[in-house]
Length: 117
Length: 116
Image (cartoon, rainbow over all chains, first blue to last red; front, side):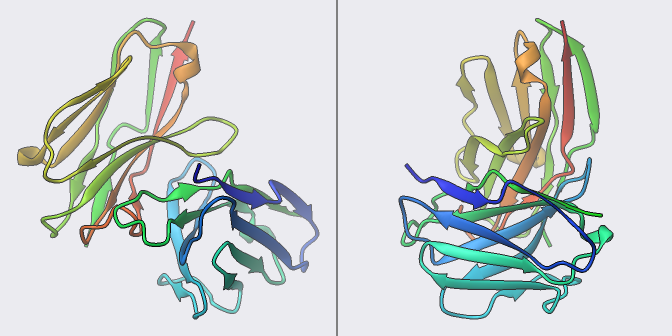
């Protein structure tokens, strides 16, 4: 159980394109999902915390207008990279916390590798 | 503020050697959780272990073992008889405020290369 599906797994697109990444909890409900970014050979850095039905909380230095997060249901959060540029190329990975699952660890998706040409 | 330090950026060993990956953390909370994740080249994060701050018992799972020492704020990970399939990046992580589901602060990761 506790599977998180992230789609797409890989995206290659031209500069200026907006890219949407989906994060779904398949067999559980998640009021909270997290979005992380990982540059090559670096660690994972939290970008934002996504809460169902409310605005996402962004970490310092992360542009809200650049990385739009929508958590419209208890099983889906989306991250849209708007007008993507080469510097946005990175590995994006989401995780979800089980609703009412106090002290349950986050469950991670398999990540999305974004390459902007 | 919380911080996780993995001083070893890369380790290279020969198959069947034992290897220990170091993790040192900083937190002001008295209740927190520590994790280890494995990230193979394919990129997904594989959960290995979770340990809460009140449980200092060492844990062994097959070839994996973990040594949690609150006195030195360390949570080290040992792989015995390493295998080529163990080659990956390993991350230590910390969540605060007494909830294992809270946001994670990751260490910089240790790239382990196991050569045949």
